[in-house]
Length: 216
Figure 1 (cartoon, rainbow, N blue to C red):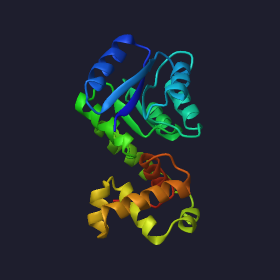
Figure 2 (figure 1 turned 180 degrees about the vertical axis):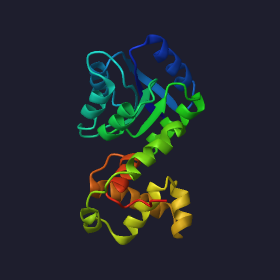
Figure 3 (figure 1 turned 45 degrees about the vertical axis):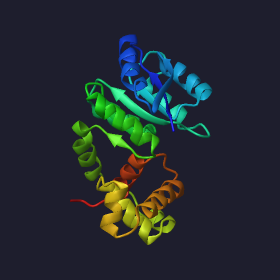
């Protein structure tokens, strides 16, 4: 299956570099490019990409606002936030707005390809350079009540959510809980649906916010 990708960045040279990296892959097709957030939202509604690679600093409508708008459509694309600026404002703003992944622009092209494929597969990916800071930030939070999650989720789903918060893949969760990988996928999909979350990354954030993640 070909992964349809839309690129949004206000710098033409950056867009051309991203297209060169992505469009050369046999399983990826760049279906459009936008120079600002408003154009990105318009093209996403028209071209229906699977993944949007979204710069966060753009004129008129910035990337975070565009991500928030895309999260509200009936079948939203997965959004990979891309930025030069390694700041908490951009990192947490993008993920809280609905992005499924976050990369710095100086990341290796291989990581970009991995991220696009991971998002298309229903997973999330955060640049390793900021993952530790992300986890520590949410680990320091005073957790919100977990009662609602415990009422909505089964015991097994809560176990899977805790393993997600450890950063484990579906295969690793399956080994840890001694269940089939397909069963893990079913549980993850059920968790996202029951909690109204758009991605695995948001599930991890939810787990930390509600005191459901391991504190070690």
